[in-house]
Image (cartoon, rainbow over all chains, first blue to last red; front, side):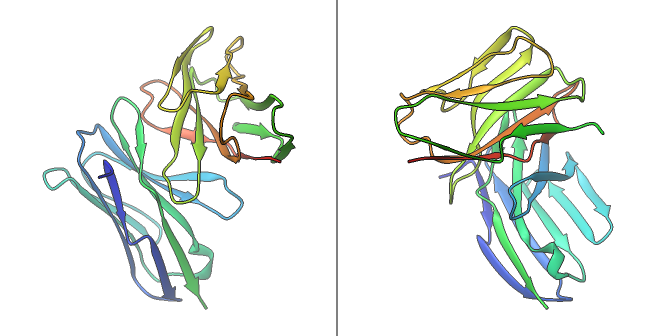
Amino acid sequence: KNEVEQSPQNLTAQEGEFITINCSYSVGISALHWLQQHPGGGIVSLFMLSSGKKKHGRLIATINIQEKHSSLHITASHPRDSAVYICACATNKLIFGTGTLLAVQP
Amino acid sequence: DGGITQSPKYLFRKEGQNVTLSCEQNLNHDAMYWYRQDPGQGLRLIYYSQIVNDFQKGDIAEGYSVSREKKESFPLTVTSAQKNPTAFYLCASSGQGGNEQFFGPGTRLTVL
C-alpha cells in the first residue's frame, strides 16, 4: 500500500461543477502540499498546509491531521482547471501521491 | 525573474550513451532535488543536495550521478547503467526549512 493515496485517479466534470480531490496518508508529516501539473509537465505549488484550511481564489484545501486526510476543492470549475493534481506529504523528504487527472468540459 | 530552468525540454539519446540534464536556479536556494516521473506513479527522488559540494542518494539513485559544484547548478547524468532511462525528469529547489519546493519545467528523456 502506498504511503500517500489519492482519489479519484481520474475525474471528468462539467464546467461550473464543484470538485473534490482526496488525499489520505499513513506517515507522520510536517506539512502537506497540493501541486498542479499542466500537460506541458511543469509543476506549480498550490498550497502548503499543516492544519485547518487555506483558500486561494476558487481553490480550497483542508487537512485533518487526526484522520490523516486532506481534500482539495475547486469551486465553479473551468476548463482551464484541467490538469493533474498531486498531493505530497513532507516528512524528511516529500512523498508524492500518483496524482488525479482532472478534465473539465465546457 | 527568479526561477528554475531545465534544458532541454525534450532529449533523445541512443541506448548505451550517457546524457546530462541541466538544472539551474537563481532563487539562492541551498537545497536542490532531482525527481523522476513515470506514468501511473508518483514522483520518485533520485538525488538531492542540501549544500554545495554535498549530495545524497534518494530512493532510486542507481544508474544516475550528480554534481553540485555551484549553488545554482545541479546537473544530473543518466548513465548507460540505468535500465529504464526513458522518463520525465523534474528538478526542484528549496530554501531555508526545505518544506516548500519549487519545480522546474522538466525534461522528457527518450532513449531509443
